[in-house]
Image (cartoon, rainbow, N blue to C red; front, side):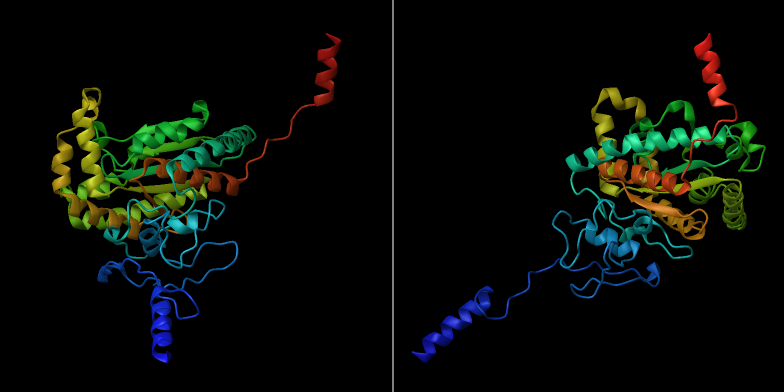
Length: 361
């Protein structure tokens, strides 16, 4: 009888029921960490330290890796929710080495966990974004020089144009200045590489959007070896000084790297080829660029590492999910606009007298 009771108890323990020790659910093993990723926070076992009202204390790399499995979250990871500030989660810390191969391009590190919720959450931000934009523009009429510059960088099909359409479309177009940078013209080639950038900067009160930017001169220029490496090294420092001068003049620089995966890019390029209405968007040169994918990833890693500063940090936005890309960039812009806190300027005329004259006439 004692033997049967012991066997019954053993079966309960193995099944995780009864009063016996429960068997932990299996968790997908972590991918091997690259040595080039530098010193980063590690998640040991299932213990993730958290503080009330803020996101888990994870590195950008670790956060994007485990959040790629949402809504089936990794063991011990609590969804920080849409109210948690997004900037600290996506920001590249100044001077930290970046390994894009370790950052999952389909991650959902915070906020909505599915498309329907993401689209709805983005739509809810539209009114607040438009209101803050109007105040920013209104404040400029009274001499406020503050403005925003959104810099979008990423591989082909990563969603730079889609961001302009779906995110910037929430703003009043009269207060936006959009510039797409392509191959430099002969005139632009006769000037320093920042010359054409300075001509396209937003005016006070405006929201500027760069579809590609001055970073092309350390990306394509590096991959295609258009300039000597010694000159490339100087350009990183020039960019940092340039962006510091913009910040000193009231420009909030929001730099977003749209992180798309290799297979997702293939899928999007095939969709363009399979749809005659999208052929105009396809460039055979995109196939050649895919052949240099590792070189481009390395060039981006260097740019993110060398040019993420306190005054102009880089943000890595997972871009495999278009709906999440749109939500994340809208949230980043909202957080920056709320930090600026633009206010309507007071009247510089006698309001009551003007009212009296109107009523009298």
